[in-house]
Image 1 (tube, helix red, strand yellow):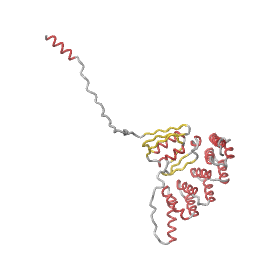
Image 2: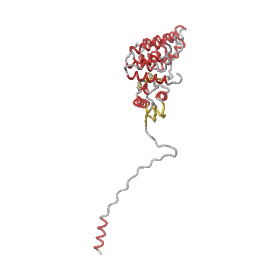
Image 3: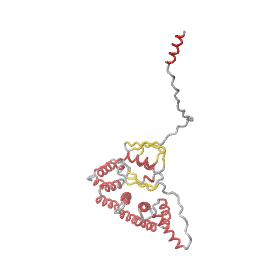
Image 4: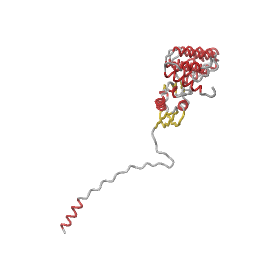
Length: 309
């Protein structure tokens, strides 16, 4: 009997000690119809010249950087694109994507976004993400009509000289009230004596103001073609490409003849929408630079295939 009891105790001692229970993580409760929280996400696809973008709570600068990597588009001024965005679109052109992403932002496109070839040599410059914001321009003491008018001109000149686009906008809105000639003189003063972005935007204002004498604008654009600032030169080329007539085309021919391959490519992009540039494009189609000749050939083929030239 004692031997049987000892045998039973020995068997019990050999049994495995049960493991401690595994703690399960607490379940995440999701209310019906809701989604669990997700972190920032970004996906950019580019195929057959069409962009698809899905971005959620991502800095706009990061989205634009990824678009640049996929398409070859150069984007400058990313420090001005600091806002966070949530966008989603599929199968749109690069031009449409840029317009959607930079809606409400002050920017300039150099070159053409019309084809995969031209996109790779185009450039987008973001001037200021908060352009057009309301500012307080203050008031002036009424010390006489002439003195007040001069004080206004001085104040407007200071605003036009500013590198803050919002201040420049405010100054331009006021200076145009003094008449086309006064507006031209003020803008020409900024181009001659201002700095950086202020000069570029003054030329842009001048180019886009339909009230200013076109011959004066053409003269300023011609002068800008030989400016030391490459951005100002590039804008002048694009502006002349939009201006009809033989004078603008002749100026662009001269720039093309004297320029390097980058300049020549910029000129071809500028005339890409003109109906009077066929002979110019035929000349460019034999350019020794492959990028220039390829773009000119592509534009010529597009013109030849157009049923309504």
